[in-house]
Length: 276
Ligand SMILES: Nc1ncnc2c1ncn2[C@@H]1O[C@H](COP(=O)(O)OP(=O)(O)OP(=O)(O)O)[C@@H](O)[C@H]1O
Ligand SMILES: [Mg+2]
Image (tube, rainbow, N blue to C red; front, side):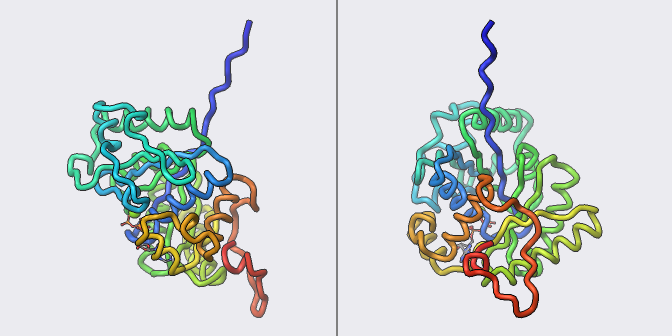
């Protein structure tokens, strides 16, 4: 008797935030490309279903989108297109109001799509819309890990906590924090600790720190050039951050955990101060 062929099962990692505009799409796109450059098979799903912009960020002009799959008009193979470094892109619709709230059969097909991608990919990254709409929560429920992105803006930190609360109560996913748009590790640590203190006090659990992304004009330049910054300016500070983040997610770096504890006057090593 032959033993069954084990089913490959990739990790589904969703990028979310409470407040909009904190850098989710940039994080999702660049992590996807950085993971692909580590030799991993990666798909990137634009789950901002009605107002997607992963395609715009990568200078792609898809004819079809995930709405066609969720409405059973097309197969996943028909709508997926190759992106930078071999990342398989699943684009979203732009300006399609019917996609702003998925019905039961669309949700069922979304779950089936994710299961299909899991079987062929090592990482399935999902870029979500901001906030805690039903669409977002339905999507996060399909993820193994949720990376919550915040910046230093106090309202972004408060909204990140509010989102963490909802994710904790309605999803099985492991939650991790990425602080975007900061000067260095100390600044990132500050935002993370505010979130962690609130989480320990009110949710009874501590948050996992994944790392940060430097505030970097190279990101803005890459956005304008419609390219991932890790390809457009690989030597930039932000690109180094994305590579460290990708290595950590791929299990090649230090495990996600607490933010670095830097005492007064303690100078972190350069790579740590820029990205850990
Ligand atoms: N680390 C960074 N340094 C400099 N600019 C950044 C950085 N991260 C993001 N940006 C800029 O911030 C803007 C918003 O980024 P992005 O679209 O990724 O946010 P978002 O959270 O996906 O927004 P939305 O909630 O609308 O989906 C973009 O113009 C981007 O270039
Ligand atoms: Mg976005």
